[in-house]
Image (tube, rainbow, N blue to C red; front, side):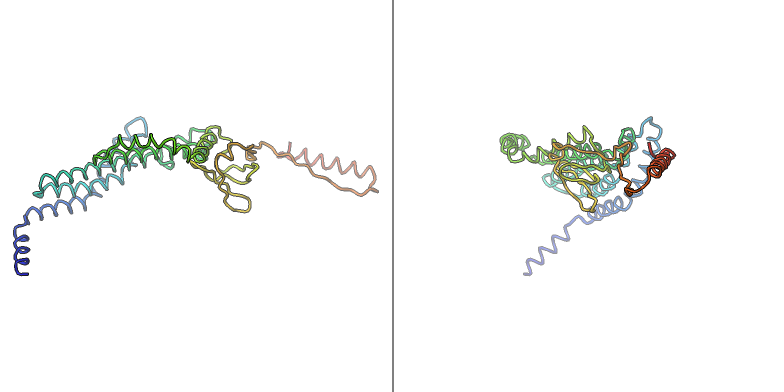
Length: 290
């Protein structure tokens, strides 16, 4: 027991306390100043971006704001570890973690940049016929974000020496089995592509099909969400909607109305004629009726 305490005391005495204190100082200095650093850097970059002819650079800066704040915290930890006398093997692991954080920051920023609610997609939607109600942009946004997420995970796996070629080969061998098992999902995905490309309806439209009738709320890879008149939410597979006749009531330029006016059999012909003329005059005088 005494030997254990002696060895523990000797271990703590021999620690490079000056280097440790300097590392802690570096970490906390950068950690607490990261907000001011990012604010200053972003103001400078936005000022430069406003001089460019397009808003793309500005959108990129906004998308990378939070990822860069996270990066400054990682940078502070990395610089603190660099000031410590760490052995080469352990330093290699530290460098890998640092490079991985850079990959995460890049993927995070691009993930934010391709969000359907980002200013880039908002500006693009304003140039489309459907405007903000277009379902094509959110659908494309989900696809692009999925690709970015998959690439980020792949690059991180490659950074940690994971056999990507073996993974791809395994996916190739299991591709047929996966395709057979996911026929329904693939059909719904292709049905969603048909819907967003042909655009039989847009978000907020009142549609009716053999399956459901209501207002379109959203469309994703697998299904379309319809809000019925009873205020219930019906989730319809895209394959079903893609193969059904869809009536888009919101696209009506005018609505035909048929109604009956009942009169008694003993009503004189002159009175009936007068009623018909008065109804016709009322309809003719109303600007909203053709």
